[in-house]
Length: 304
Image 1 (cartoon, helix red, strand yellow):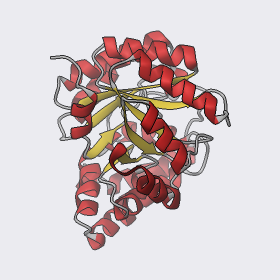
Image 2: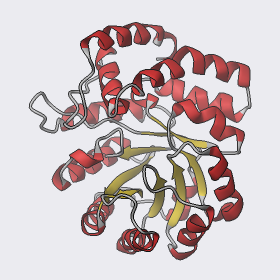
Image 3: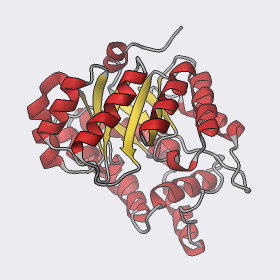
């Protein structure tokens, strides 16, 4: 069975998109066996997609060869049960190569990260995204994050000019602008809440019904509960989940740049899941914070 067409992939996008970490050994080499173990556990849950080498997967620290291994391993472990997306970024040459190799490896879609050049001119961004779209037949996901903060008219233009662009992953946490983008573009794209589990109440309040979850690396059941409660507009139940589990974890993640990955890997280790270190320049979790995280993970027991 080959990869999904863009329309087939879009039809499956409701619920939780998970971001596995990329496992490294103590010498920072890729631990593909540990990675496969984690993905195999993830896809036991009804996720709508899994992303190989996303932000939580340290895309910008892996080599092209490692990237291909991660995509191949994710496709193999997913076994058609859930869609597989591949993160690509860097620049116009490398992003195209990564996307092509990912398609050959059986990925169903491409998550397009911002290019290496910050605050790029919009015309340059158009060429960057178009080059990826022309290189593959897969459905593309536009990731608005960091310095790529797109206006409604800019998103509309990209959606109009790139035929296989099917979704926007909003990674700014700007609900006001996201509402304007959605109003301007209508059903041209599928709308994804993309900055974190802590923004589920805000995203779902404006009609989003798909979100990308880092918590799925440690507690996929909790991620699915967040989607379910938010979809039902069950704010009392959703609020309890946020206060008890999500907000304390995200408060720790916000303490240092890079902790959005480092904290998740350390939490996995505390829970007995393989993770390994983060690659530089991401920082290790401070020893005194490890004890704090251990206490928080003990509270997670009911949602694991």
